[in-house]
Image 1 (cartoon, helix red, strand yellow):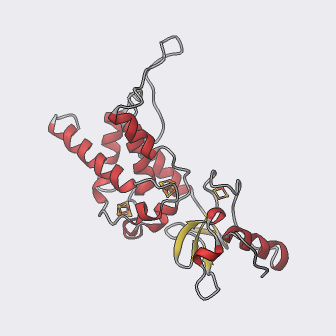
Image 2 (cartoon, protein in one colour):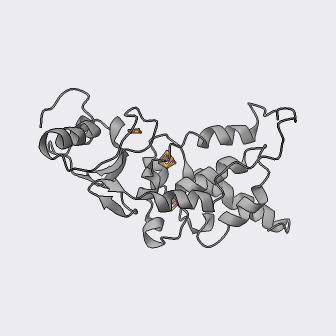
Image 3 (cartoon, rainbow, N blue to C red):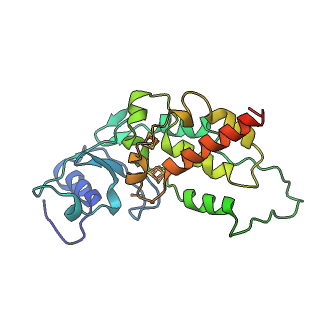
Length: 216
Ligand code: SF4
Ligand code: SF4
Ligand code: FES
C-alpha cells in the first residue's frame, strides 16, 4: 500500500478497490465531509473516512477497516441505512410548517435561545457514526437513536414548525428519548461536533413539561 502525506482512510479503501480487489464494495460521494456516506469502523471506532487521516488512527502502522456497527451489512463495507432513516421518520424528522406562500416570512431572532439550539444541532450530515457508537441501539434495536432524536430536537426548537406536540408524543415512548443512558459516545464521536446527548436531555425536559401541562 503506497503511503503519502494527508492520506485518508477513504483513500486507502479506494486504492484497495482500484488496485487490489475490484469487487470490494464501499460507499462515498463527496470526499469533503458533506454527504455523510463514507462512515466506517476504523480500528474499532466509527469515523467519517474521507476526513480521517491514516496517520492519526493507525496503530503500529496498521488500520483495520470494517462496516458500521448496529446496522445490517449489505456487502463488505456497505451497510443498509434503511432502519437509520426510518427512525428519522418515526421521530417526525420532517419540517411541518403552518404558513402558506401568501403569508409573510416568519422572523426568527438570530440570538434567541431556540435559534441557538437549532444552530447547534442542524449541521447533522446523517453519517450514522453516532448511531453506530450507541450501546443502547445495540441492546434495544427499536431505540430511535441519537441522530433521529437530534433531528427531533432541531425541529422542536424551530419556531416555524407546527407539529411539535405530535413530535413529542412520537419520541416520548419506550424507544424514544427516555431510553438514552447518557453514555455520550454519540457526542464524543460525532464528526460535526454535535451533541445528541444534550439534545436528548432537552427532549426529556420538553416531554416532562408537556406532560405536566397535560398535553401528552
Ligand atoms: S448519550 Fe444516549 S444516544 Fe448518545 S450514545 Fe449514549 S445512550 Fe446513545
Ligand atoms: S449527529 Fe453527528 S454523528 Fe450523528 S448522524 Fe449527525 S453528523 Fe453523524
Ligand atoms: S464522502 Fe461525503 S462525508 Fe465522506
